[in-house]
Image (spheres, rainbow, N blue to C red):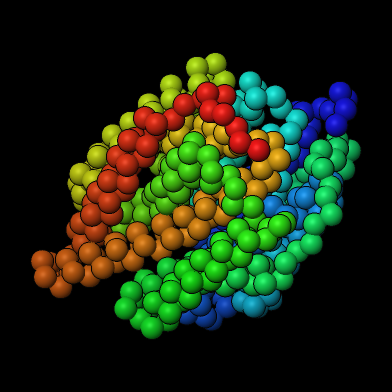
Length: 467
């Protein structure tokens, strides 16, 4: 690493690619109904465009920890961009559902490399007192991508064909590739490490099985042999994976970061934050479209102010973290999330749209404060040599949490919805409002747990780092 490193262009190259990947994560969701008809496939099949994306992330992110030690920063970056670019073009030009799904999987593979790589570069090129601001900007991207996806995709679908959801991403990926090739240096230390095939298989079966089981639960039922079998096999595989990693001299995923209490607290908070955030970004539009009878594009516009506010304030929140420490930022953020879920849980069919806008503003401000600051503090609590492993662990946890959160909350919403329709009244808007309220109450409970955990946060330099 030299003094000639230009952090601005480096961040631009990495974060533009990350934004595109995270935008693509949710943008396609608004077009699933149209794509189901275009490709003549059922609802269960078309959902794999979303499920397959999460599944790929959950499978590949654990492997990136060791890949970042085996290959240079530039090799990893170019692999990420090429996979994403090729997948995006393949999806945009897809003549059939199978080709579109293959494109989505390649896109997710690129993002699975980009997210851990970006965090690792940030923690290498920025000193500890500036990481909060840098991670604040990354947090902005991690929130803005998924949040803006449905809004922009809705606008595209109203004016162009579904293919343009992918075509519009290509210029940004090319810009990111050129900027990265010019400015991104090799900042990681290359080690002679071998990839353990059995660990890869156990990781794939473990994380893939759990995400798959939860993802199909809403369609085939929680008591289905497929669901229970996939989840049980997944859990057993992860247990075997962890036991193998502990015994290996050079594990695929080093679990030593779990020796640090602040890391454990951060991982738990990240799991809850992503579980709540990604499921909320699915449930809230469903509530607005069915219970409040708002059009899809209008729904995106209602969610837009919260996303924009978060974009504006993310760098400020990062600087506050650097100046005042984690608790001063994270705890107030968790309180805002608790307040928002408390209000969400009272929503019904007569709720004014402005109430949804204001509550979402408060929610996104709270999540913005919690997300980036928690990630920064979690990784700051580790010695430098554990950064790749800590990043791989946290990123895997986040994607698995998001996939499980969406599956669980949508399944519970559907269950409450059906129960209301069968036992109370055959009125879908009221049934959806009832189901949404129930789901938001569960989110409130998890948000309260996050608030309690935030009280135990402290600056990592107060903790003695074990090598």
